[in-house]
Structure formats: structure tokens, C-alpha cells
Image 1 (cartoon, one colour):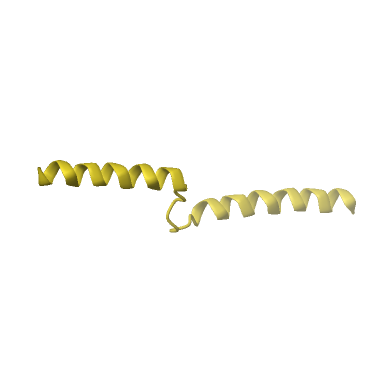
Image 2 (spheres, rainbow, N blue to C red):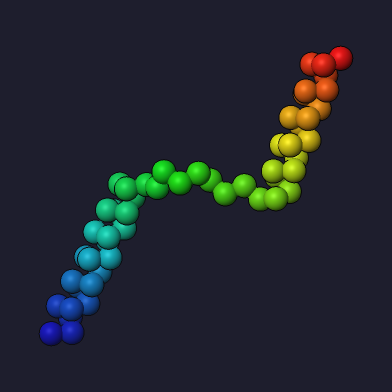
Length: 52
């Protein structure tokens, strides 16, 4: 019985991983505070250049 259970568990895990790969999330990628700060500075600099 243990052998059957082990095999079934392995197959279930494989199926679960394959299913999870198909349904990717639409959630936006996380951006750290430091990265957001860099982007804000770059955007601000580009605005300053355009105004001049």
C-alpha cells in the first residue's frame, strides 16, 4: 500500500506543478523601494530636460 501511495503522491505533485505552470498570475512584478526611487529620479530628470 505504501508503494502505491508514494507513486500516486509523486504523480499528483507532477500534475499540480504542470497545472500551476499553465495558470500564471496577472499580478504585477514586485518593485523594491530602491528601484522605485531610481525610476522616480530618472523620470524627474527627463522632465527637467524637457522643460529646459
